[in-house]
Figure 1 (cartoon, rainbow, N blue to C red):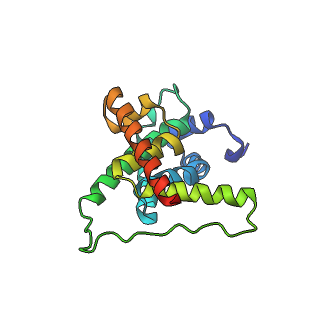
Figure 2 (cartoon, rainbow, N blue to C red):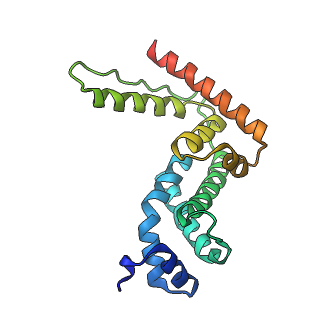
Length: 186
């Protein structure tokens, strides 16, 4: 049976035995989702690609620690998120802000004749644009919570903060996002 038809558990057993074709198959199955996850955090295509590839290397090296309590995809995603956050923090140490500040971007308004679906997509783009304008910590926690789907407990582990701090951070991030959205509609 070709590797493409094998289930993930069988592929993981083969990967642990050093089967490179199985590793390629696992990579092919998860690369797009893991790249997108990383890109939402690091915001740079080249860095996202590097983080994704490093994450796969780490996953294959640490495959013996995968207990199967969560799905392999969730386990791999955790590695990608942690590596992405680490990379993002490293890259932020060297960011220079111009003297005039960061230029503001305008959100286009919907022209007449838009369908409801077009209008919904425009609203989603406006929300994402407003999220990008938030403080880094707010941006990160909202992305992980609402876009990536992590619950509070998982966020506590990923961000290495207490449950109370996590709830407070999300609450403040939501309020900041509400204010930005109100400003964008005025």
